Figure 1 (cartoon, rainbow, N blue to C red):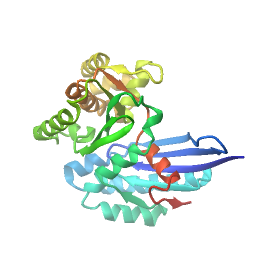
Figure 2 (cartoon, rainbow, N blue to C red):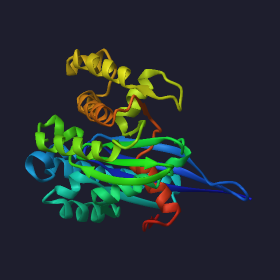
Figure 3 (cartoon, helix red, strand yellow):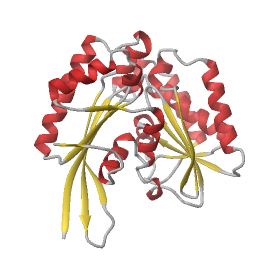
Length: 301
């Protein structure tokens, strides 16, 4: 007997807001399959408000209300059974975050959970990385966001240690990351990776997904440190406008892609990793799986 249910995840990040609708396919005697049905991304850059002014602007509040209402209608049209909406560092740090969450609930009926960095890392870990990794290898998992980056060391398929750092693409773009934060991150990575003979980096986030797509590599094959460094230097040789017109990058990707690469390259350098694997997973995938496995509360459409 085949059963197909639709679940949705709303990821409210510092750079963009995403709605992921997935088919959850169950068949007796077979493992459950999570298949992406639809992904909508709206570049509401909340972090640019919060990290500079400490609060979400009226304009972005209105955009968020419109976006969430649109997401609500899309979920209804798709006949989504359950959903969960999570907001990360920008909403977490905003002085008017609670007012924004309340206003969105009143306007669209969408209930938003503002989650901490450690919970974010735990939800991402729920994506069942085992289907993407070789249990005989050691990995440093790096999930780069607009406001923060989550790091985890994975050995024998198990998460050994995990930590969230306030180093993100939108913060870096606005020159809001102090040198001390980089030093702390370098020490943390070295402290938790020195004992392993060989480390591979697992990268997630929209920027590394885009780089992987551009590379033309086959799914499952890694990018090298050399390739990433070369592409990083190439990007820096183009102006912001040229990255849009000549490299065909979206305008909200063309600026954050450089600080994102700086984070991935730093993680590779400090862990002495020569390869980065890109499994194309993130917070939204983790939310879908955590709804299914009932590890977090969810809302019913």
